[in-house]
Amino acid sequence: MTVPTEDLRVRRLRARLQEAGLAGSFLVRDLRAGRQLAIDPQERYAVASLVKVPLAMAVLERVATGEIDPARRLRVGPGDPALVDRPGPPGTGRFRHAVDVAVEDLLYLAVALSDSTAADALFGLVPPAEVGAYLAAVGVEGIEVRHPVGDLNATPAERLDAAEGHLAHRLAIGRARPTGATPWRSST
Image (cartoon, rainbow, N blue to C red; front, side, top):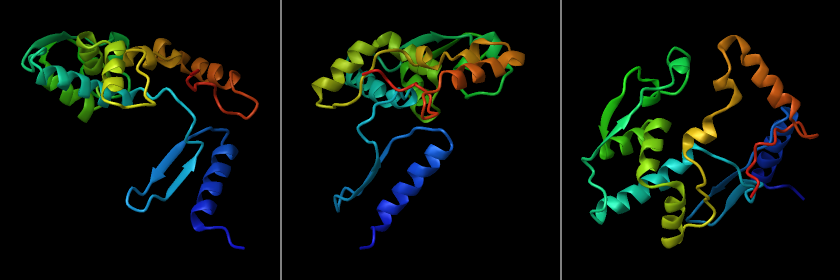
């Protein structure tokens, strides 16, 4: 009996992840045919940037009902001075000076550029619990919104001086599970 190509691909990917000491999860589904490939699709992980889409949905719902004016300007920044000159993601978090940005533009920055600082400004309008309530109201399951993005992104590597970055790596490696994977999976 031959194993379908999809099964071989999934097994190879799982083996490569294990060889590298990593854990991962994915699901790819052909919506027309109903076929899917997956590795542990039931696993839950903290995925900071993906929360920006439900956040945008909740903000846009409030824009549609007139509760939020898309032209309303919010003060954002300045960014963390320690991060301004370091490599990292683009966006308002790297700004040296505070700026006033319209809600509509913050939506663009948060979703199109994955600007976490813009997302957190929007979380100031629609807090995480309210984004979660919105998702429940529209029937979206399996996504929990518990924190602003900045809380999830505040890693030891970002808090340490550049010359001490190796300490964050040692911390992550030292906290590895017996499988070699790091324990950063969501606890729920």
